[in-house]
Image (cartoon, rainbow, N blue to C red; front, side, top):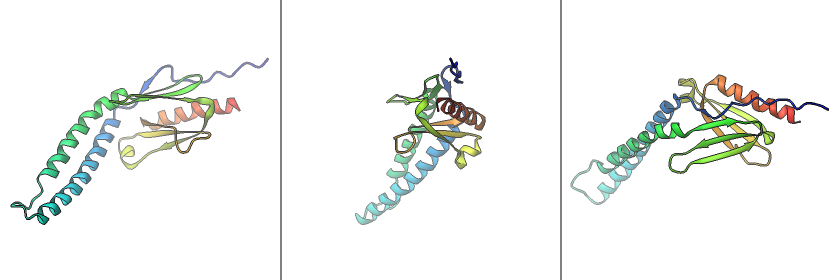
Length: 166
């Protein structure tokens, strides 16, 4: 009788790299600047149409700053709650601040794995891994904040388990 091939695992839950906080902060900054510009334009048009005594937008930039400060304060909690684990049977993803999610992806259903790096991720030496399973549209989970070596190790773990399953 043939012995089953032992599958490599992560030996427990793993956190994502702390540099992801910088990526998220930078992304928040870009979003807040875009939001501030759009809201300021809307406020400027509103003020001009009602002949307000002042013509310079004040509320929109302040609102964008408050949103930016709040979003930036959530980054540490967001990072602290992110975990992933590869067990013998599944990949477990856990994240969330207000609404916490745990997603369980069966290892034998994983069809392919993508390793993505955007320009901000590359700047901080990070990558993200997306998992795709049979029968699903798009990825069923993405693990952000991995070093390129961790991403390659995770991909090889899942590819090895898929090859052993077939």
